[in-house]
Image (cartoon, rainbow over all chains, first blue to last red; front, side):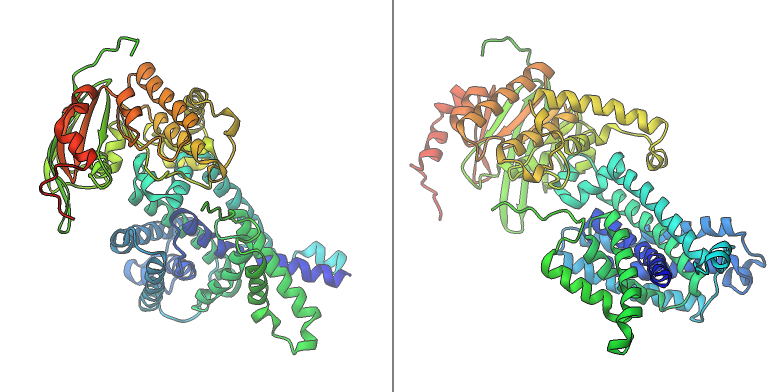
Length: 307
Length: 267
């Protein structure tokens, strides 16, 4: 029983990590109807940039001879992500207004490879241990008193994700910019007619998702170091989105949790019968089932079409 | 009309506008002007360039020639967001609402140009931004009362019947408290009762808020009833303009509508 509980908890906390990546996807999809394939690379890029600002073997150190304190590094990285967002709008999106979604999607694939290459060139491709002073190791009293293993870092990640979701949900539902974001996602023309500027909105939404990517980058980086496989983890966000619905912030979180738990439980209990490695494909099978029975996901806006 | 309204000076004037898409001339050399507080109709057969004209006025299309003067500001190209900020609001022929959002939120977007608190306050939804949100909410509630759509305040508009969607769309435009309201076929696809309601709202808007209205409509009965002046377009050219009575008796207009005496009919 305790073992099951431990499995579920560790699944939940791993799921939070998926959720963080999925969240970035949802934001951009909600506001611009674009599936941003580059979201995972965003997280990687943010992690690399942050590492570079604060570690003493980075490019920044070689250039200026000092490193930034962690808080300044985070702010500087956020600045970098805003510049990236602005460049994406200026160099890519602006020229693709009113194009088919598939074309925009293709452009984000290009963007993903470009950023990956740029990150490699600028920062090198070795695994970088990101340490910004987040707590590590087991939560002591649970381990000592109940023999129950919970990773501190994952608790932090869960708290951060929770705060992020609340802030984003309020932002989207209750503010002018949030409404404008949803408006742009719904109907470009109508949004223009009430005086919403598409360009501003796009820069804002890509910046916000850059911020989410930064948070995801920090969490993943602290857990397993910043490495290029981070951009592959982004693929796990796909089933998370299919579960939660592409347009729902809470959906991204709950989808991530379900997949995290499902994976772990399946691995532990069903693994021995099918020769293990369930973790690699479980999420996709679950997504497939969802596509058959509930294509809009758990929380997605129901697709209403009048004919 | 029973009541006495004061028609003011020119608020919008369109001067020699020409617009082409590739080789297709959508508008050629169109000029007319609209006075303050007026209800002004653009009529004409399908493909006459009516919607194109509206799209030029609010900046969706950029004409190749001519100028548009709104509130003394003359130029050829205007950006839609600029037009909105200067007081032009509009509705669309095929309803363009934010389908996933509620009636209330849809109408709130109409307040977009009037809200200025910066994004950081908004992200926190705190302090000044919170207060601002409340003030705008009040205006929106008045619009909702005015259009008698209290009951559907929290309903996602995608689920509403057509007539009500049209009304919500009008509400969104009204929430901007525009000086110039562009209505693209506000009564298309409505039944008689809905049409009467819409007519009443349009006249009330004009009467109570003094909003200048430019509308496109196919229902001649409606147009002749509610408009102060009418301009007639056909194949992108202006056939006539004037009061409904003048236009009704204009030979060119009669020909265009009855389809006779078109010596240069090419089809």
